[in-house]
Length: 276
Ligand SMILES: Nc1nc(=O)c2c([nH]1)NC[C@@H]1CN(c3ccc(C(=O)N[C@@H](CCC(=O)O)C(=O)O)cc3)C=[N+]21
Image (cartoon, rainbow, N blue to C red):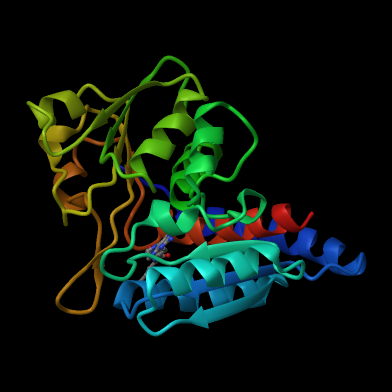
């Protein structure tokens, strides 16, 4: 089994982002991303630091707004303000959200043109309708990795485990647009390993540590692991048991070093595109 090098792909995207950011700055536009952080959460805090670091390296301005357990009203008004602020080009509201607040709820307060992580239901609708729009960065990373790795998708069986609005559903739409035959599985799917084992490309986006084992994988299949599950030791494991699938899969995105780094760079790419 081959490892797909997400860090190398991220680096290439980052270089392209830096070039675009430089052109924008020469034209007097400082590409700016606003990161709204509404809760204290370890994996979110890590992602935010990673966005800040990457943005700084690529010439994108990053404004982090840490809110202390805001009400839904406060969060929405903050997003309304950023949506109306001409100096802000991209907005991401980090999940998890405070108790009782849904992403669809707050997402409606992120202007579609600045919705670089595809949180507004209107962005998802545009994606479904085949209109120009930003997909959630993680879903976009799945499609980008398959594109950069030159994985054939036309007519192929792509199976996605997980039907979330931020990953499973938008990834399905993006891969449908590449003419894949897409199956979405979830917790109620019958004979899950068997359904997955028909896939030429298997995308694991469930959030269950190392759930996907060899019996889920067709010999030679490309496996994309979207999971970032924190371990007790402070590390990170994916949704795929890499050791188990190693003898069956053709290729796998490792965790860390797979989908994660590409996700961060695509958020920046979306930001410079929004600024342009
Ligand atoms: N609205 C929203 N969109 C998100 O996309 C979102 C979010 N909220 N909340 C938090 C989670 C988490 N997340 C990660 C992204 C990249 C890595 C990543 O790059 N991880 C590194 C390694 C990290 C390590 O070693 O600890 C890697 O996979 O190589 C991790 C986690 C995006 N999230």
